Amino acid sequence: MIDYESATSFLDEWGTFQQQVFFLLCVFIVPNGFISITIVFVADTPAHRCLIPAHINLTAAWRNSSIPLEEDGSSGTMVPSQCFRYKIDELLRFSERGLMPGIDVNLSDVSRESCLDGWEYDRSVYTATITTEFDLVCDNSWKNPLTSSFFFCGILVASFISGQIADRYGRKIVLFVTLAVHSLFIFLQVFANSWAVFCALHFVVGMGQISNYVSAFVLGTELLGPRARTIFSTIGANLSCDVGYMLLPLCAYLLRDWRKLLLCLSLPGFLCLPFWWFIPESPRWLVSQGRVKEAEAIVRDIAKRNKIHPPAVIFHSSEKEPPKERKKRSNNICDLLRSRNIRGISLTLWLVWNSLTIGYYAISLNTSNLYGDVYFNCFLSALVELPAYILSWVLFRWCSRRLSVFSSLFACGVLLLFVQLIPANLVLLAITLEMMGKFAVSTAFAFVYAYTAELYPTVLRNTAIGACSTASRIGSIIAPYFIYLRRYWTSLPYILMGSLTAVTGLLSLLLPESFGRPLPDTMAQMQHFPGCCQKTAYTVTKTDEENPDVLNLQVLNEESTRDPVIQHISS
Image (cartoon, rainbow, N blue to C red; front, top):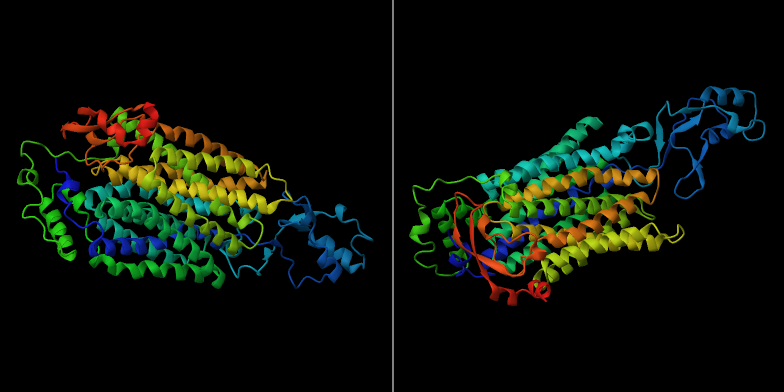
């Protein structure tokens, strides 16, 4: 078994190579920040009412009274109906006879009909969205949240397969192929001539987006040293995503047409493709695949670029050639449930990821429903993530992983439960609490990727993160419908999201602690589950690669003195 960390310890922690890879991978992640939230502007529903064709000969009084008034569920005021109008035939008869609405005719007695001639939309905020172009309102309003769900279904499918592909064929090739795919299909969406075509393309965009992000995240985690890895996996990757998120409302404000907006957002991905010649494959992954010579070549190139003289032998010769009689075992997604220990970790993490995506995306997609300017609200929603990611780095650097995830999730749940208790006239207070909830869930989201990467071994890391992302996409698929429930009761989304995240926060305490531990390379090196019952740390003294369930572990009581979480539990 190769100890990769020890074998490559001679490399500079923050040399020229690490700085270059850190910067390039952060730039790579920026487009992922705006792709998943683009639908906030592309599919937003502006104010609308039934269209009264210009050729219909109605007097001004009857044209102005052609739309019935209905009570608004959220404010309780009377507003023009968005889905019905008075029957045009009856209005024409009244108009021709010279009768006046409300004086000669009681409007409550006039029959209604649906918007047979289409709708007219408020163009003050958007020139065009897919909602206005494909009329995704009234009887077709169910298609609007389904549009987002198609994107997250693409993420679900890709999460299931991309991790296994990257673990089998390499991080680098998946990184660049998926970047090209999601940039190309965003460009093709510009030419979509129907809602069905747009959704089909949106599905593929979702596949490319999550595959690209996970590959970039794992590649950075494996290429960088322990300290740089912590910064990249918390601040670097997440701030890069947030930069893209903050650029989205600016682009949407300048480009009010959805086609022009998507065309603009497809360009950054194509500009990143030349990075192929500057980002290498993960040597850690190559070693795990037995391709030690290729890994050595990359490590020596890293040393050369950092102006470090490498040792004559980086990996021992006995490590380079595995015993011929030992049959190489190919790991797959089934290994995540193979033993009781890894099964407990996997199931708990799937629940945590699922609740996180529900909370994060539901709050993010809800920005268009908040009081005030939609562009400013979206920017504010992105802005609160900046301190959240900085806090996640501080917590990740010095605090317990398990307690940090618990506190963030639980705080988010409590804040969202308080939102529905705020009186309707205190709108700004409600928005403040919702943004604080976004802050808390963003902190947990920034944490969970890095935490998951630390819990799983190299041979399964990409597959594990992909599987966690797969499980979480059930939440992201239904997240748009959490917002859709506002139509029936404004407080219902907050009650559901708050309860779910708070309970999941409590469940996260079952996870093992990885603070201060080296990255495991094999399944035998994983921590015990449940972590809250583990009073001592351990290390591997013998590994059976043919049967990873057979573990011979030596308990190290002295390790507990270096782990603050273990100290707390032991006391």
